[in-house]
Image (cartoon, rainbow, N blue to C red; front, side, top):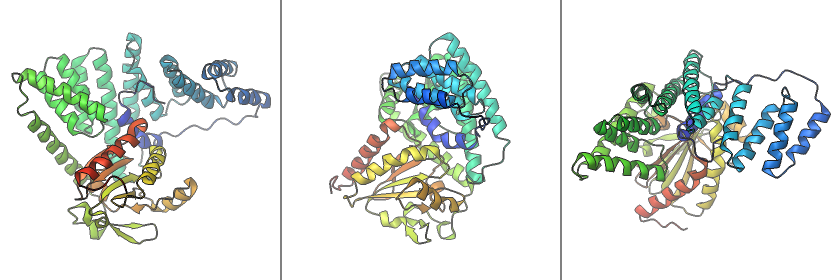
Amino acid sequence: MPSPRCPLLLALTLALAATLAAQSPRPAAAPRAADQARLAQLGDLMQIEEPGQQMRGLEAYARLYPQAPELKQVYQTILQDAIALSDDRTILRYNQKLEALDPGDLAQRVKVLNLLLLETDPADKAAAAQQAAVFARMVTAKAQEAPPKAMGAARYRLDLARLRSLADLFQGTAAEHLGNYPTAERQLAASLQQSQNQEAAAELAKVFVAENKLPEAVDSYALALALPGQTIAQRARLEATAARLYRSLHGGHLAGFGDLILRRFDDVAARDAATRAALDPPGSARNAHATAPAQFVLTDLQGHPHSLAAAAGKVAVVDFWATWCGPCLVQHPLLRALRREFQNNHDVIFISVNEDADQDKVAPFLAQHHWRSAPWLDAGLGPFLGVDALPTTLLLSPAGRVVYRASGFVPATFEAELRTAILGALRRAGLPAAP
């Protein structure tokens, strides 16, 4: 669970969480007879509403029953209390305890690494470097596994590249915090080679500043600004830092700064196009030569065709998800709330696009989770639009251009930021925000 301090790599972690979960089998607990008295005691502790009192009781319970099969539940509840109390050390300690319960859980290791990288204590910095090296070895081992059937080979290859990028990002950031700048520069550059992400570009810029390589720092900040993943506040801070450095190199002027950012946007777009071409998505025959989103035709679960041309003249919110994507489950209620908010505005349309390779899983999933949305089954639209992580939410202008992109999401800010983007797109198109 994220700390209230907002872990450094949260956006990328959420974007990859589905892959991490899909690759991290949980060992089954050894069968044992239930101790009714012990479970009754636990039930009483779970009823306590005051976080500090409940946390103390559960910690005593964990010490008394160190082999209890429900220990994971106990630790998770202690974490909830620690977050409510803003007790960062307890948050770190119990994330580490959860990691010890299942050392092969990559997703949990990512949480611990995020938290360690927030700490300033030298021992925590050293622990982060050790953990990052272990994580890198685990990712290398995972790369030898066969792709999960539900995910598909092409998606799996792309997500493995992102996992390797994440491993290099962790190692580079840990080296940076230890002041080992040459190693940090090498690892962060390797992260960007594997998969370009805003976090690695921004961290590499900090390393360049520490090494007094200011032109390289400005260029790396420009790349970070061209990549998705920032909140509005993060982007403003990055832009201010980059502009300050640029002025220091150009006599106090910003002439050419905007052109640098635009060149970086072009670089990112070219790399995205190359990635899509390398994936060679199967798509459908009728979409094989599509050159704009409006030309795509997708089918629903009943096989009925739907054209994106129906979104012409409207602001379209396009949500890409899959049944195997854990974060998609978390994001869905946030999108549903926005759908209800704009349901009477006929200039806003919401489109749900499913990315499952095994499409037979979709209908049972919708029934199990009581989702009322009627998804369209992807036939090349996602790769065409550069969707390389799930969930991804795009906003298309009435002219069919992508004007907002969220690869992964930050739960605390996702709904507000997407609402702001929708209202901004309506305003720029001269359409009313109200019904």
